[in-house]
Length: 392
Image (cartoon, rainbow, N blue to C red; front, side, top):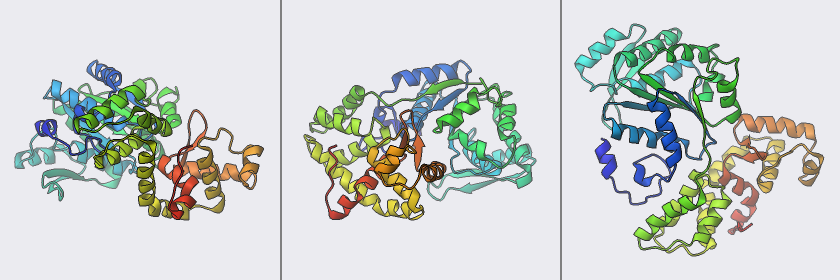
């Protein structure tokens, strides 16, 4: 499977989702070395980064390199953002790990059935890939026992295993008390399994791993992920455009990079659309045209989202979108400038929008989580009218 990925040629080299190989992965050389060294020297890693800056790509690139160096290792990635309780976490973990440590067969199924006492392993065919996969019929009140059995199964495999759990802060919201302590109690006794705990909520992740009151206190090596530098990112983009016989003006890339502060997903999305046109990129207006199309495509999604908001929440979102970043949204000056009701009503709306993950607090202040949605909110009247001015 890895050989097929290595040889795959993409029609568009600017991936927006998924991972193929280092060829289509930009820079992050120092971060890769740092994570590889930590895992190779038996240290678990905590990776903290805002969404859409490229933490998933980094993890998958590290795992790719690891498996190229040592074919016998087993690397697993799971995103637990959609899980809501311990049973759903256990089911996802089982689907991620089981059947991947050895080739599925009747013999392996009998082995798994004998190994798992709290639930029943089932082999089914994946509808999309046609490949056999294992799932566990997890019993709600036996989730803790099933979790232990999965970890015991990994330990008994004798293989070096690496498990990345993305959006790890989600476990703090599970209704089951003591989930952090439960996971920590198992993880510390798995000599052949190393972990990458990744998360996008900085304050929650830091609290989980740096507070002496929490089970994971000082149990990992901390890594914070920043944006890729503008120069290496431009070289990466220019190389692919040049290979396709196209020029890509540096000042255009610089405008695009600065407009979205180097956040990988937004830059990649724009690069993907620009490359699709198979034309030389010589002016900012070309990027603006692509942006307008993207915002028009997503207008129904954004309209559905704002339909669920109160008037106060929507007014605050529009105000933050127009500012870009707001350090003190409940200040008298900000409230007056945008015709908001009162500082107390702003605080209520602010808390709700954070809980809905529509805005977040960065080092500089509050921002709209989805930068494209932020543009749409601040320019939606222009989009409807058929034009959009994004030069500022």
